[in-house]
Image 1 (cartoon, rainbow, N blue to C red):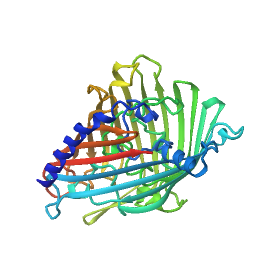
Image 2: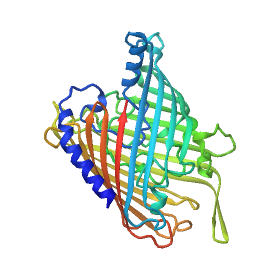
Image 3: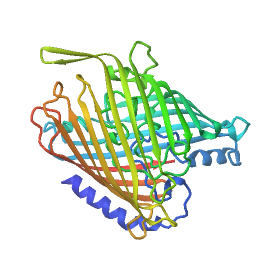
Image 4: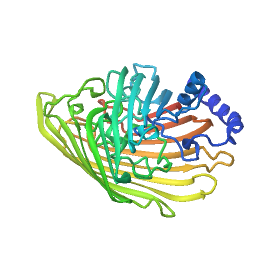
Length: 435
């Protein structure tokens, strides 16, 4: 009851105080009515660079023209299971994430064009938010496998564009879903325009859909590897990538160095976009392979498999513009599909879908709200149920600059883990800031 009363007070506070900030002049691309990712973004730029610019100006008294920039992302949320879950807990958790990224663009100070270097630090202080709910696919994307509290040099990579962006390469310790499987981005990676965020849902499968989640390096388990994207024409691309695949055998690749021991994650993706159309959109299909021997102990039986293959498809589409001249307000939808042949991991099929509205509330052009569903087909060798449905709805409220407050309601009618888990309702209040 205390959480419910606190939630009501917070919501009332948002609606009473936010109009004071609604008419601020746009300062950052992320604030142009296109929504914000409510999960740790795998994009090359995680923030606005605002704090870095202010620090440089305070220290030197001049504008920053060095080619270096400092960006950041901060997410804090409180979660409460309203029904279902582990009865031995109070079912309330708090999670806190901070990411800082130092970037260097040599083209701003030299003739070396198209290059970008990045080093990123991650600090997470988390709790068993999803484990308490007996979920296979978590409703809260900050928390995955242990350790739930970690400090690490998360990513360091070098990106290079060739031939006016027709070829884009990226190498280092990174998260490949910054380019691959990017359903949250309406425009392809060679398009520098500000892209509407397909959804502000807080579950992690919006970035690494379920059939890939046990294999593909992603938050917070980055991995060493390289990728290449080729755009023979502006609207079509083909790509290849190869990465350390030890995540599939339980290694926390985000906090260890590279391992070359026969476990690799390989993928290829091809996509087409109609980003200049009146109603822009894009679609892509990818194939992947996880190498190495994988095992599962199920009762007295040990199941083993050498290599896993999979295929996925995703797309996003603008459905309607409300006011294209003033802000990117309107409605967008997305779809995710995936299947693999795993015998040892929880999810072998996946469907994701959602719809998002931007700037439809009068006087609140930077607000967005939406609905998403995530359906995991579960491997009978490892899970007692055949499917796990998850439904989520949210309202993302813009406060000021690039700060958002987002209440979220999640419903899981059939949690996939545990002996006989009950249907689960969860409430989340998330604060999100890009800086």
